[in-house]
View (cartoon, rainbow, N blue to C red):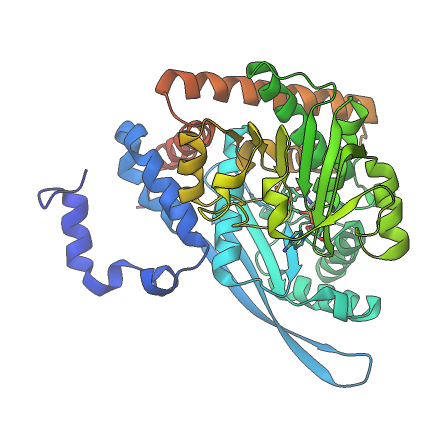
Length: 440
Ligand SMILES: NC(=O)C1=CN([C@@H]2O[C@H](COP(=O)(O)OP(=O)(O)OC[C@H]3O[C@@H](n4cnc5c(N)ncnc54)[C@H](O)[C@@H]3O)[C@@H](O)[C@H]2O)C=CC1
Ligand SMILES: O=C(O)CCC(=O)C(=O)O
């Protein structure tokens, strides 16, 4: 509710042009706008906590760094890097690091904000953070990427640390990247600090189960949603966009439970087979040939055709803004389980809801990765490591319980599962904010 009598509004009026930080300029905001719209949608459900809602709209801390490295040919190249700590009300910032040619500050702000919501939605004791470097890693050697990672880690070393902000892998980063980050941070602080990053190799304090954890969480929440919708797993037709860490693990685990993968799209192309694609064989084919197309027994589709594939469950597991008002009408799945962060625009969300398509939102569906990252961090602190069965059992329980409690909130308020997740998460974050208060 905004009226001229509203003291908060009067304060905004007094602040005038200084009310909005430059990076939130509505004329040039980019992907973070999606997050702001999601916060607008949840605000009416926050009751008195809405007093603090501005906290969610403004990242707590933003660091932009120059990352210069020697290239293999002896020249120097500069890359732009970011680390954003969106919120730390409930604990240290936590979230991955992305290497991609399209990374922008606005994107990293959005990704860090979604981490705040995700960590609160599954009740992990973390705030939200995310990092990124604008680079196309396919064009650089392993040595160049190692130098890039080490320089970036040193530059963001000001604000990361096991009790401050704990990075992890995201698009185009992996356990090796985390090993370099851990080593660089450790050299700089003069002790081995395994807890500064998660998603490390198991031999360096990484956790069993982290590799497949995000895909496993997509499966657990997807299977729970299928039960609610009366859909059987056996023979269910699944289409997956993105065949990296998240997409290929989700495809393998659905396949292992009797579902049929009918389409896969990645950056190299799109394949389809109504008879089903064996994701293990597709992964081997991708590793051998460098592309998904040409897989035996599949036909190749155009990029846009992927969205119209006849399937029961659609798993976007690549990048943001893939499901838009342009293609939401073509989607034939009854259920969408968001492996990627931010794959669906708010306008597409509305169209899907009107058409009766259920969406398990990113902040719930892909929380399996950060949940096992949390287990890794706890194991590093205690230097006591759990078995894979223990990890998977704890992960499955957390993901199922989070799904079922958010489903109840959805039913109670008559909202989408995304809004339900935001109601629960924003309430938790703003309760912490209100209890901590402002100083002085
Ligand atoms: N790695 C993790 O633990 C987590 C990742 N996520 C999210 O899941 C998504 C995927 O991440 P990862 O699997 O880790 O990355 P990855 O780098 O392992 O794989 C990315 C996949 O997306 C595909 N891709 C890239 N651009 C594409 C395009 N324009 N069209 C179709 N496919 C495209 C790539 O070919 C690749 O198969 C991202 O949104 C990420 O933020 C979310 C939670 C945790
Ligand atoms: O494992 C983590 O800490 C974060 C993973 C991540 O970046 C994400 O959930 O989007």
